[in-house]
Image 1 (cartoon, rainbow, N blue to C red):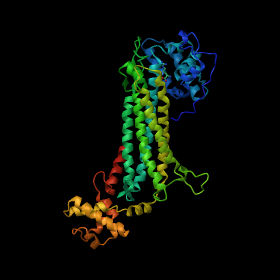
Image 2 (image 1 turned 45 degrees about the vertical axis):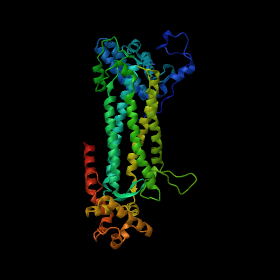
Image 3 (image 1 turned 135 degrees about the horizontal axis):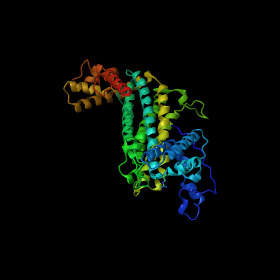
Image 4 (image 1 turned 180 degrees about the vertical axis):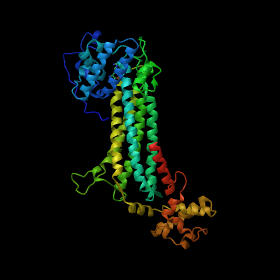
Amino acid sequence: MQPDKPQRATHNATSDNKTWSGRFSEPVADLVKHYSASVGFDQRLAEFDIQGSLAHARMLHACGVLSAEDLADIERGLGQISEEIAGGVFQWSVEQEDVHLNIEHRLTELVGDAGKRLHTGRSRNDQVATDIRLYLRHAIDEILRLLRSFQTNLLDLAEQHVDTLMPGFTHLQVAQPVSFAHHLMAYYEMTLRDAQRFIECRARVNLLPLGAAALAGTTFPIDREAVARELGFDGVCQNSLDAVSDRDFAIEFCADAALLMTHLSRLSEELILWMNPRFGFVRLADRFCTGSSIMPQKKNPDVPELVRGKTGRVNGNLVSLLTLMKAQPLAYNKDNQEDKEPLFDSVDTVVTSLRIYADLLNGIEVDRDAMRAAAEEGFATATDLADYLVRKGLPFREAHEAVARAVRLAADKGVELADLSVEELREFSSLIDEDAPAQLSLDGALAARSHVGGTAAQQVKRAIKAARESLSG
Ligand code: ARG
């Protein structure tokens, strides 16, 4: 999926683009040529462009528009071009503007007139829309694969920590104890929705624009369904103007990518905090950390920081594409050439971030004692004591008030709730009995939250098992 480094397109000042310059009386200004060329970045679409051209040519032949000889020439020529590109010897040229014209130009060099007939009943407008959809479908499939291995590794880690206790936070203040596994499983849920979003997006991506030609369709007796079948599309775009002009499918992908990165940025932020010695909850394997060039003692969480930082770029790509599309009149406008770089950047960033994260999860070392010690500070079981009073008949608001006053006493004395004696606790409510201190145990608090979605070990184990089943299904 990772593109090879784009090759530099060469520039030849004397040759002009003959593909569309017939009605022009002077050559295009040099600066304009470079300004309007997209070959520097759209060459990444080459393999999809060739697939699309082959399907188009085969359909033209089947419909009686292209001879068997021309088709054979086109197939042979495109086959050679494909090898030239894969071998890194294809000569990309700015004169030929974009990936489509570069390939068509080379095809004509190789096979003559048959190459000039390929574009019958087609326009670069429906061609590029097709290429992007093929590319994006491929990218989504890879992202879904990577998401699955990220989730598998997340489950592996969670499985080891069903009984590892940590403070759950609200407002980044100790709130109630949770298991580390339960905390990790929250990220499973987030990335599950991310995967669902990509799957839904894929269904809207996987429709064929070809046949729309420039904007209105074509006068040739084409068979769009045949092309769709050959290219593995689920169907054809139903309106030619819409097919060539809208990029909502790419915008939707960028939104899904932004949400996924946003989720990864949250996990990253937590890892950064947890790695801080004040927390000391986790250590990351050295291969994910870097040192400082001046401070010898440093080990920095660069990878999570970069994921957090790159999320900004991916969010920006979404806004770029929304702004690109806003108020564009129908149908195709050259503005749309600007869709590619943000889209490619979002794909690359998500792919590399997921790849690195899957491995990073394997390299997380957990300090169970530090996690438990943090949960022991901050009155994490105060709610449990209030719930106890409610079970004894006190309205919750009054129970809350009674325990809040007990917390104040403990805080004043610089101790935890569990350090107060039953007599001291009884000051705040006569309903407090000898069984009250048991309510204050962290493990008890964990086990007591045993319902779907709760942090009790039994529930978390069930959630992990269900997740495993859905991943392997
Ligand atoms: N390079 C162009 C793009 O990316 C291809 C379509 C050009 N169409 C045109 N009418 N100029 O959008």
